[in-house]
Image 1: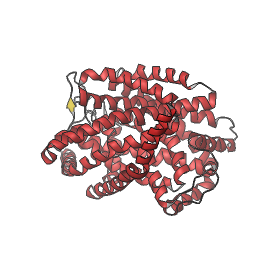
Image 2: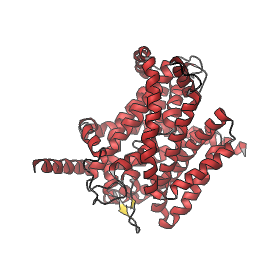
Image 3: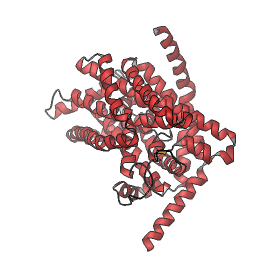
Image 4: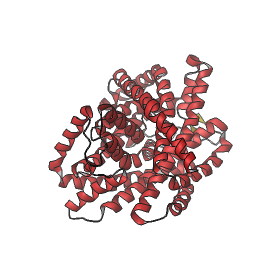
Amino acid sequence: MNQFLEFIDRIILTYNDYVGGYLVLFMLIPTGLYFLIRLKFLNVTKLWHSIRIIAGKYDKPGDKGDVNHFKALTTALSATIGTGNIVGVSLAIYFGGPGAIFWMWITGFLGMILKYCECTISHKYRKFNSDGSVSGGPMYYMEYGLKDKLGSFAKVLAIIFAIATILCSLGTGNMAQSNSMSDALFTNYQIPTWVSGIIITSLVLLVIIGGIKRIAEVTSKLVPFMAILYVSSILLILGIMHDQIPGAFALIFHDAFTGTAATGGFIGSTFIMTLVWGVRRGLFSNEAGQGSAAIAHAAAKTRYSAREGLVASVGPLVDTLIICTLTALVVIVTGAWNTDLKGVSMTIEGVETGLSRAGISGVGLHLVAVGLMLFAFSTIISWSYYGTRAANYLLGEKYIKPYRYLYGLFVFFGCVWGIDLVWHFVDMVITFMTIPNLIALLFLTPVVIKETKYYFSEMKKQRNH
């Protein structure tokens, strides 16, 4: 069995290293730049308007949908604020050097405009189920938005995306998260992985059986709490070591274009490795261009699709440009990046070192472990919703409940499988979603532009009245 898994792992790794990683790299950044220019930096110029929408200024109880703007955002954020913010950042630095963080920033900034585009058109092409709930996402805008341009191939593209979404829900949103949770519990508290697997699986099933409304209720409370807990601790460390922050930024900007010579446990990097790992882990962190968040935002209660797109654009700002940056700065200013540690151990070392400077010793391990538990758990429950929407699209409503139990089984698998295979599988299936989605976004550019113009013209009319 081990030899078979090693063989599968080698095939996946070959694809990631020589095909998938470069395809995403050469599509994601140019597509993001294209929309950034076409939409005139909308993610920056309309940021305050987006925040006011999230705060509930434009909520109308009579609008159709499952959840309000805030709950749609927290559901999407809970799917992205996960192990990528703690483990992914450290892995990016380990393999790509501090300069990889610069390319994570680029991915996050461009991700804001990509999230706007995909969530706007996802909301526009959403469908209502027999029970009144909403189904939406790239598979729907591929089939219905592209059928005039691509004919029968539109349906093929939608099916490919939906299958990839199921694979990704089992990998990115499930096994990668549960694996990190069980690994942290075993490393820090010597809890066997199979015990963690049973407990985590049971808790996940308790939440996801209730569908999007129960998931949204949990995430709307869990996301703000976990973000405040983790961010406040990181800010305490950075406040104490504030004199090291300029040097950390200088190192990030310098290494972004030059790479770094191997030192300590750091593998070493050429420019292209720094770029690839920054984009790869950035995409894992915020999922912009991947199309996953478009599934959650399609359920929002609003009559204006562009309004929900604006809400979605804030996601990468919070996830990548703020939370990932804070993790990276702690890892760099404390020197943890220059040790022989990898992944969550590197982050724990950074937080522990930083808190000890504040006279708080022995807390870093527990803080990172709790943060990882909360982040990863919220990601698992939100990705279950994405998977059910894809299963509904492919097989029909009657397969939603069986899928949830299958999803629970994969939570257990993630807890007990080796970490390398899990992460390699994650990187592979992300590309299976992202590449078809970026192709669809480019074809649907006229729809994005039309919805944007319509929304802001309506806002102007309302102000004039």
